[in-house]
Image (cartoon, rainbow, N blue to C red; front, side):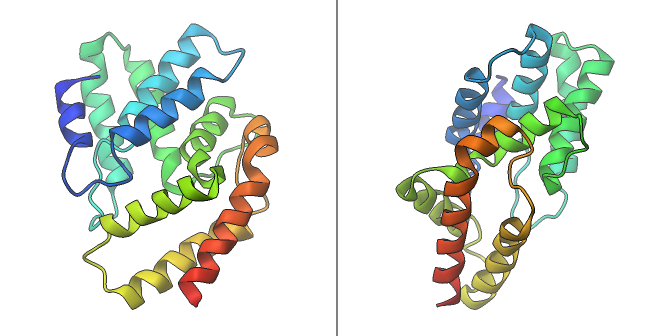
Length: 186
């Protein structure tokens, strides 16, 4: 998208939150039917910027990424309202919670979480990538923290806010998460 984004997604500490993740998200978006050109453009920008800042030692990556979107998008032709909407979508990826009726938000968080519903080998590669990104965290602390995060997902009434993603990926995602938790707690 921009040289700065290309450089960000190529940072050496990224193993999962890389250009490959963005490309996988864009592929998911391309398969979503019935979007207007405007909605597709907003989601494309949001996907590109949602992990623009990714430092596993920080707790404000989404906020920093949203701020970059607000700053960068006007130079790409976005109106102030479009840049603000992209920032809002980016911020939704922090908690993956969406208000009822927010179709773009539901798609954004569902696309971001689509990796959870991948085949077991893809899911294992994702989990290994995340572990690598958190290499600075000692193994016992990582296992406990990761199990807590993944249990939060597993205990949610639904993982995918978008109904089509839910129908396609929910069961496999829950099986993957349960398998990962079991491994973390073994």
